[in-house]
Image (cartoon, rainbow, N blue to C red; front, side, top):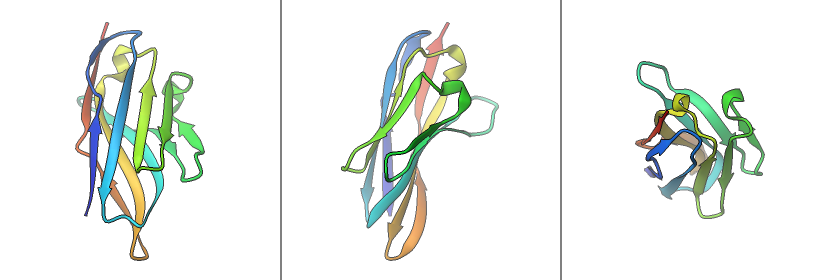
Length: 118
């Protein structure tokens, strides 16, 4: 099993910044894509940002220029969120695609709450 633990969620005023972290641990041969999703109350979970094993990053249009995704060589993925808006309020989930014993697998974290006040 692979465990993903997110941290960094908090209550912040509009215009503020937060940095989310996600640590992957467990039986992992290699990690491929890593990403962040979010789910606001009453809405479906949506993709926010992703980063490939080679470091290529992509973003949902509403966060481009404000959010930055990054990863390191210790199975961590980060989401730097600047210029936060009330509409960014959501539970943020880490998502990891990895390989174990020639199987391609995917795992989700438990989520971390981000609340942006106006």
